[in-house]
Length: 312
Image (cartoon, rainbow, N blue to C red; front, side):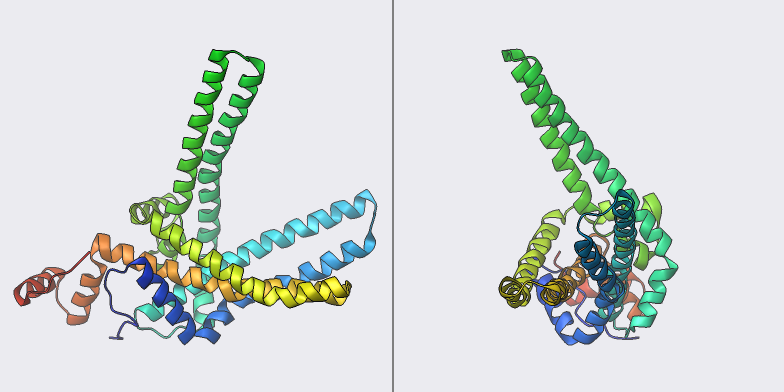
């Protein structure tokens, strides 16, 4: 059986990020080939639409509606392709992590087989988290109106209570969002779908929310640095000589910065998925038992006899 790319053991946030950087560096061309496909499909269309709208200036209502419809369709298509690319990246990292040799064709083919499940999971997550956010902001709005309609001590107390409750609800929405971040991995790697996939992601992320926050912060910092270094020359050129060529250059440089920075977060979250399974379910012991052709209980007993202590 193929050897895993890294040791199957619990990882700290530093280990997760370090392994993500190393895997990205080792398989740079393959990773960028996965991530770049949605941009190749939609960036030219967005650029052409943006330039044509800018050239029209003030247009008729019919043209404005057609432009809005085109932008909406392109945006929805871009979101679907982006989800597919992130799913393909997760499949690629997962296969390499367990010792496989994925190709761009195989990972995208695998994702397409589960494309409807991914879209449904995305809509389900947005509906749940968005609904909670909506309730929180609704409580804020009601509290604001209450303070204006009843400018008394009790009115202010009532408004303050609604604002505090609204903050709590929004925090709950943020927690729901973060605990749903592994739903793509659950669908693609475990073939669990719908509500079960959402519940599975919540279970795995129960004690890993802060690690997910740190990974996202790391990704934002890396994305900002890469984006600044790449876009800075284009911004200078646009300031000196604004025109179609510099607009296109600025758009392309911004998208290139995203292409280069997105894999850091995608790879790190795939490692986080396996780390949570190792910590909560003994996934490393299952893989060890599978390689040895024995049961998990036998592996645990052998480790105990040899004095090996497994740290979580």
